[in-house]
Length: 563
Figure 1: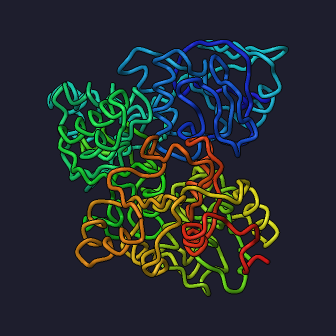
Figure 2 (figure 1 turned 180 degrees about the vertical axis):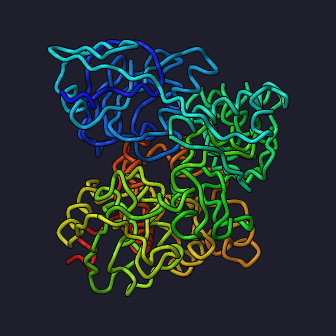
């Protein structure tokens, strides 16, 4: 073993247990059940495996920023892993572990290993982690202490860190500086706005954290929007949502409003009038929003984990690292995409899904797509699906996105996505039955143009009596749709339009209990839906969704552009 092959301690602690090695990264939100500690992502090779008490090894995490909240809940209930070992930089689960220790006294060792050491430990059945070494059968890896690089803090930063702005701001700054140190940042950056992802009731830990901060008097100091929440805030009781779930979910939303956050309740903050402009430094959580902001809007934000989003909003300061810096916005993988003739709107989430698989750990540059002239909604769907399979905070599309020209870094590798891979992915996302009881639109939240397109496609026709059609959208979009008559057209066709919620947070009874199979045009929900809802999910275009809404059946065929 080379002298360089030592384990870097990110968060200190001791642990021992069985080694679970995952070659494929995992999103804890939508991928791990907080009630059992088992993997529920049906597309993951280790679906069904319990992580409780294990030394969990994987390259990095991927997917949702809410993974930090799921990990915190697992640690507070004793269902969490014994340690986390990564081979690449990782923020989401690391932040969950940091909050568990800083605020709740629950230590979880987090380590990063080089390739040789990672491969060696991955072959072990059990391991023991101490402060100076990792020991397994026939293997001892020295552990290097956490990085202690000095941050270039301003006088105002030091004031907050010393507690002169109050205990809650001091706590927030402690978390921010700890994350900055493990990211290798040399300082912090001012942000002009924030977006909170942790207001989704993914687990009781989200509520515990938010109410603790609110009760301590926390107040945001930059304009801060809020993600979709887990209930229709004004109507959940009349919808039959049980108090045991609706009460805590509403309290979680209220806690963030008490802290001064704007009750936008949308997972598509780029659709709001407050959307950032190119070059602005912002602090957004919610994976699809982060990727869209960086890639399409040209703003700058790291993929901030839940809890760190609030800490940044309380201080106005974020670690100056990652894609806040020009050098880290370059593409390290160029992907040539075969563009079939006559693609429809389902092509874009499918390509986003495949691009994430092809670049799970790096920013890609997608080539060959410009002739299809993607719309904003197409790019929205592409970014959201990309975020389910990649940990990267942005992508570039040659000839389309604002920073694509010259985006490829020197030495970037190159690969291709061909028609055969598209067909395989389409089949993997369409394993459900032909009979469908629910059509799900709005993951991420539907735009006004998407609502108009659905109303136009239905053209006054009424949905099949055995099929529910539900659209989720933000308040601003719904208000505009109501003003111009689009909402009335949808409702006359039997479509239900819901505010506040997003498909990734809808539960029964708002999610129709009799449903056995769901049809969606969202690559994101096609991936997460089976694990979150326990139902089979079919994927297709908006036209496919309308056909299902009218007939109750999905055609068992590939789209024309893949045939």
